[in-house]
Length: 490
Ligand code: ADP
Ligand code: GLC
Image (cartoon, rainbow, N blue to C red; front, side, top):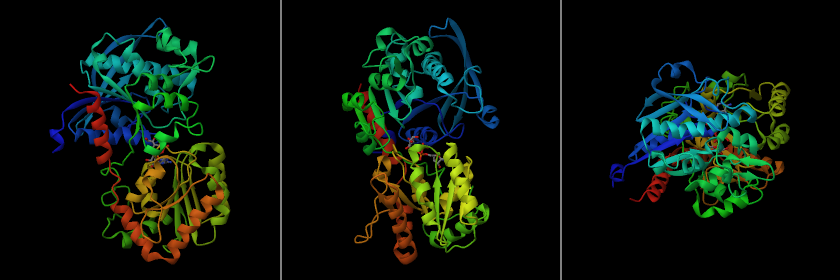
């Protein structure tokens, strides 16, 4: 069956970030890649985003005005301006919701005091925009807490409007962030009816409302970005206080693992690289990519060194306390470490201190730099992802696709996407450890080092195996399409 024999469905993707306009992490990658893949599966997709002031001018300039209206905002008594700015690329329509007062600033997220009103407005405006454009999708696909109120608005405020014909899906990219604030504030900004502020829907604890919790209760389906995470979040350890709520709703919950966009991530054509390669010449070209990286970052230039990369938001989620604890033991003169990331000051400072302590061996790039990330995926031998929890994780997928060996903790999507190396079957893609423990991380890194230095033949086979591994969106996008079809059987 060709993809276009599958019935056509229309989908509105609603979320708070999307590459290349605004991205702070993997959500931005998914909001970019999945709609494009769904277009190939006979879906008509519109992506609805805030028109943040921080979106680069080159995109702002290409947006086309599609209309405007005024919308009442919760119990504020105000009628606020909602503009629609449109941008179309590769069959995907992007509609940006314009309101300069709410979406100003240098970053998409600031603090909850500002973010709660921002995303109350965004959720309601997104549905109002669909009605205004008279584009009523089959499916409204919401992403993370910022879009959490949408399934609730859909069945209450908008229940008698055209958009209510749509079914809703909500995807959990990261349960750590939920949009929790006191009930009066969320009532004030959302205007949602009182009965929703019940313990089974929005209410959490005595006084708070939780935007994600409400969305999970009201959505027709819940997905998250790997099978293992779908199980984990139903336990107290990973459930972020919503494990009971998710167990209650688990018949509508499923895991669909993320992929990566092969157009955006292709070492053969990647414009950020100075050395391009594919599976046929990776063994000869990757050392050149490594030398280029060492030169760029001021490391000792020597392709014989073992280069370990780390590309990450620097937060507690990412297992950086484990990394910090083992660095001194890794700096043996044969190993180099490259860190790219921004985030908590404690990690930024400790990595800077290691750069000072180990000149030529340790590079701390405390910055967000998309092009440099590509060069690290290409130039490093291995990539660390020792996360405390990881809903899916994309850096290990990028790494494998660039012939780099992931070293990961067996949690969430890391467990589902990285098969541990098996020396008897000569199978697997990387090195893994289970408990959250610095000694186990060190053990996994040391196993990778020994393998690299003492069994290069099989290491090289793994490099090629990783490049050949299917980490595309193809299979996962089909699962989303199946889910949409399941919900819309007419
Ligand atoms: P998360 O969404 O939890 O941050 P993911 O692994 O899903 O983690 O996605 C992270 C994405 O952000 C990847 O595309 C990665 O390459 C990118 N990234 C993270 N930190 C940086 C950085 N400092 N510079 C450039 N890209 C980064
Ligand atoms: C979140 C998760 C990450 C996942 C990404 C995209 O930010 O932390 O694991 O890959 O969303 O789904």
